[in-house]
Amino acid sequence: MKLKHAILTLICTINYAMAQNARFVHQGIIEFEKKINIYALLKDQAKRYPDNFWSAQALEQYQKNNPQFKTLKSELIFKNDLTLFNPMADESTNNSWANNFASAKQNNIILTNLKSGTGVNQKSVYEETYLVKDSIRKINWKITDEFRTIAGYDCRRANALIMDSIYVVAFYAESIPVSGGPETFSGLPGMILGVALPREHITWFATGVKDVEIADDKLKAPTKGKPVSKKQLSDILKGALKDWGNYASDILKAADM
Image 1: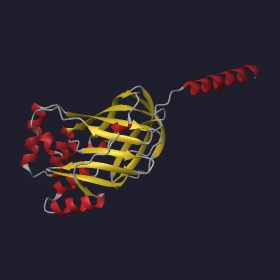
Image 2: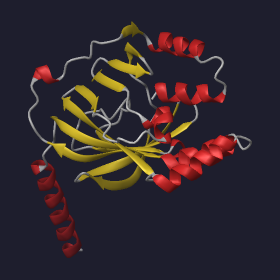
Image 3: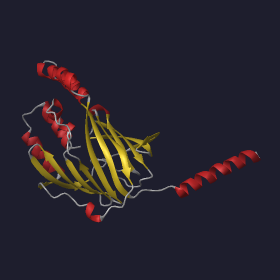
């Protein structure tokens, strides 16, 4: 019993020392990659429109000439309760079927104030640009006991359902105690470094974290676009797409990400 007690004491001492020396990152820059499985999107489209010869032909032609995944890069600048999500320019040069999917783009520049629960989103929808000022998305996360390493950080898994039907898997790092993440994902007790939407065939994963000081002027809200609320933008898009059938739902879904 004495040996067992000594071992337990040693383990507790080591864990306490590690906790005391752990470095928590409160500001910096996170580099993300968004990956879209274009093969899967085209297959889904072919299933939804089995009588549409165009869908089947598009899938066959795309698989012959293009990679399975489209990759887009972005960065998340953060400092305490402020985050700025900023997409990088699309480096792909070929004008392929991938560009026809609204989900295969990055159209949001988002400043999020996690303390006030508000955000400013400069959103491009086709040729129009809107400035959406509203509360941030409330996500009912369920934290699990699963862990994985992302960009050198131990991350814990959480699951959720957004927009009534979209299943979300996220991984957050408690050692970055900022409740933010890429795009409009937030609300966990640590920075979200990985997001997967399995049924939508989309992922966002951090490829690097720069632990650097951030000047206040690096976290400015975007200013371009017509000012609207989320509901106003939804009403505008629904009106413009009322005759688009099932295609409209895909565009509306992507616009609400």
